Structure formats: C-alpha cells, structure tokens
Length: 263
Ligand SMILES: [Zn+2]
Ligand SMILES: [Zn+2]
Image 1: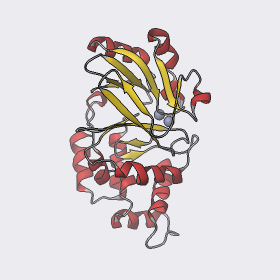
Image 2 (image 1 turned 135 degrees about the horizontal axis):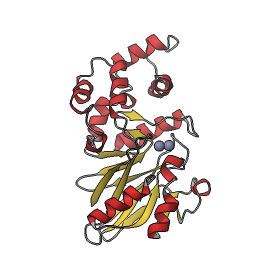
Image 3 (image 1 turned 60 degrees about the vertical axis):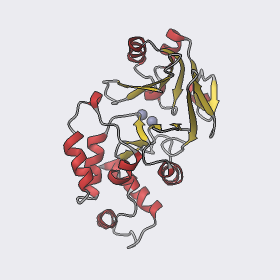
C-alpha cells in the first residue's frame, strides 16, 4: 500500500492523502480540497486517481470534489448520512464496508460520529496498520464538535473504537495541529515528559515534514486519551470546581473538549 501525504499549505492546514495500490497504480484521494496538488502528486508518482473519499461533509474536506472528478472521473465515496449534504456521492458508506483500491488495498470503513454525526474513518489492517481519521482524531488532539457534532458521541468513538485499535496503528488526520495540541496536553499535564519531548523534537518541523504518530503514542501524549490521569483530573477540577473528585471518563472528555474550545 502506498500512502502519499500531501500538505495543502492553506489556512486550514489540511493534510490530503493518496492511498494507492502498488501493482496497479490506482489511487483513492482522501478529502482532496486542494485537488490540483493531489493531481500533481499522483502524476509525479505515476498514480491514477479513481476514487475520492470524504471523511465528512465539511467544505474544507469536500470542496475539491468537483474539480478532481472533472479532471479524473473518479467516484466519490462518503458516509451515507452525509451524501445528500455533500452531493455527487456515488457510494454511500456504512460501518464495516470494505473499500478496495486496485488489486492489493482493502480499507475498512469505521462509523465514527462526534465531530459530525456522519463521519467515517478508514482503517488499513495488516502488519503496518493505518488510520485515516479526518477531523475525529488529530495528532495530540480531537476534533471540535460545534459544527454538527456532539462531544458525548466523540467520546464514545474514542473509547469504544479508536482506543481499541492496535498501538502500532499510524495516525493520518485531516489537519496539522500537532504543536498547538501538545501545548494543550502540557497545560493539562505539565508532568507529561513524552509530550514535552515530542513538542521540543517535532513541534517546529515544517508541516510537510510533520511526524506521523502511532495510536500507542497518542495514548501517552493526547489529553483526550488520558482521561484517567490524576494530574489532568486535578488541573481540570481547578477550572471546573463543580467536578467531583473522581469524575467519570466521559465527563472528563467533555470538559476537556469544552476547555479546548476556548483555549
Ligand atoms: Zn470538519
Ligand atoms: Zn476539517
């Protein structure tokens, strides 16, 4: 499986991806807002874009569909619940659907509500698993929920789905927010040495050279996976004095999300 990450170099800080079959050169483009950059990247590697996948309905993920379809005739795939809002969707997706690319690539569709209620992540199984997670999970962070989402549902997606994937799973999100998110984690957990080390080592990298984290790392450096951390809970209770001494994990997650909205 070929994974080509494309830095959009726009104000939204999008990452686009080409996922391609090494044998046939067929490629699926994930959220190709800057579609010309995706087309150039495909040409440079001898790949042919035959499918477009929108992780969700927001325009910063779907705005390149028409251009890329016009240039390639690619089929558009998206969550069945988002298809009407996106328009021009050829294949509506549901949990467990398999997306095939060429002869060698199979991706599993995960139904991952929270950022919006019709959001999919793509999971590549195998020796080197990979997760294409749109605006659900970011490096060291989580998607916001104020454009059609719900933090309680995002919590369930994190705990019931993402946290159960192999620790070796590589994380390929829809935007580059690593340094800012690590700073948020460190503001919650000043004693998180791995987050501090990563911020120092990787925080100043050019976005096109951004580090690819694994889920194992995310569980250690992402506040939204660290819902049991005593330090995080103690600092959260300073901000939200009504929180009980031992808040449940969902409450911690929702309060973290609320805090991050203003932070
Ligand atoms: Zn979004
Ligand atoms: Zn986005």
